[in-house]
Amino acid sequence: MASQYSVEALLAARLFLNPQLVGDRLFFISDLSGRLSLYAMDYGGSVPEPLLPPAIALHNPALMGGYPFVVFPKLGQIVVMLDRDGDENYQPHVIPLEGGFPQPLFGERFAGMQLTLTYRDLEHNLLGISVDQRTAPEMLSYLVRLDPLELIPLGESLYGNSIMAVSPDHQRILLADGYTEGDVVLYLWEAGQGERRLLYGRPLAFRAPGEEVPLTGFRAAQFTADGNGLLLIGALFEDRYGLIYLPLADPQALRPVPVEGYVHQGIGELVLLEALGGDRFLLKYAINGVSYTYEGRFDPAQGRFTIDTVLTGVGELSEGVVQSLDYEEASGRYALAFSTAASPVQLYTIEKGRGVVQHTRERVLGIPMERLSRGEDATFVSHDGLTVAARLYLPAPALGYPAPYPVIFYIHGGPQSQEKPDFTWFSMPLIQYFTLNGFAVFVPNVRGSTGYGLDYTKRVDRDWGGQDRLDHVAAFEHLKQDPRLDMTRVGVMGRSYGGYMTLTLAGRHPELWKAACDMFGPYNLLSFMERIPETWKTYFHIVLGHPEKDRDFLLERSPSTHLHNLACPLLVIQGRNDPRVRAEESEDLVAALRAQGKQVELIIYEDEGHDVLKFPNKVHTYTTIVDFFKKHL
Image 1 (cartoon, one colour):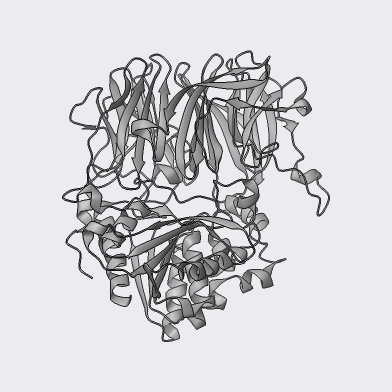
Image 2 (cartoon, rainbow, N blue to C red):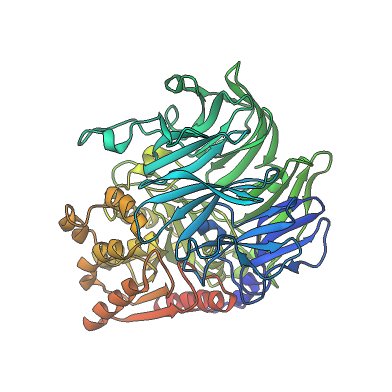
């Protein structure tokens, strides 16, 4: 198979991420220079101005959590989070609004640790930060006053102590401990009261061995305007998440809040809740992976939420993903980054009286839109009757490739995440490049994925490589019924957990695959957990298995136990600075397989972490992956 299109044609569409609108200026992250950095431009259009020195590269905001930067107009400063080539030890630095050389906000106080910006207040110059100490298991949280600089300790916990909401007067802060996905307990910190106090849920330390408690699923919260209660997103009353009102005077009397006026249909979850001022809030749903966002009003007396404005999901901003959406309270305008499976990310504003205003015109170079694949639904029923969502991307008819097509299974990471029609994510340009080269790409969201309800997501806990693996095998059998697909020429690939699953499938079902590509996937679950940061171990010991108590189980589920069965060529890709799956994990994998005489290629990027972000590396990665599968399929 020969394609007339290079991967540079796809990657010519640059990224525009995490916009923040401040008056007549639009701040955002972009890879205009070939690496992610911070820029600003005038509202209405101007040449983007770099705000950081060219040698500095920002990390992928999707992997960071929290805010990658915050503009504080009253201070004339920007706080931006920097690491070193993907090591994820994010540190807040300060630059002027017009840009400059970043200075560490806290000096060396948190050196070698990972800080996350979890809260901001532009009016009062406040930040909330979470501190992952890396070498100690406890997580720390602080409220930060920027002028003058003051850190107010909010406590510590093995399970997060994450800031979820701050009251309008900043005297009360809602904190959350999360044990596993959906198992969340709430605490309230009150100024002058010392330590946090339990607000809702049963802490792990108080549970009897084997005791099961209702999963709360709390994932977002805001204080109500009167300060008497909390509006939360949770799964106590709806498996696919809904709004919940919690009165602070009687937390046990929390109740579901019906939402009226939404226009979406299909399967999905409520994923975001933001306060807009007064009784108005923003809601965001992910429905079949597509973003629907709404503005509406919460009435505590009536106990209901009424949507009055549809922001995305219809019209110009439909059939795609909102990467980020930011509200400027002073003007009532939204700034957002939006893309689809076949169209690059653009910056938009949504404004009263003007509607949607587009600020960028990114496009792929020299590839007509009709030659890109929008994908089709490929939902199937798995081995045990469970319905599994999936998408199938086929070469566009205009390309002229004859069916049946060779097939790539693309497996997302997480595992508790979701593959979406999102051009900002690593996978989407790669999927398009595969289809431009005549491949069909099958993208399943097997059990354990988010987006289909908490019960579906929890099915992978303590079962990595179990029923999730069998979902892929069932998908393989299902796809044999499609005459457009050549199921004798199938490859498999994935990143992170997707890399783990790729290795597992290649070792336990070697007869299915003609080639496999693992990107920074765990090879041995025991060594993987030994190498991760100390703060991560508490979580993985619960959700995956304890290295001492569950040693036999973890070995049985490790790809290292089964890869002597590998019967196809394997490509392994790794970032040297990856803190999640250490480079040694991939090096151990390659050394062991080469010693067995297996056909293995290894690529290590010395200036990357748990992603491939820099332009030369992305070009090399995409080209190498597709050429590898073209050779072997």
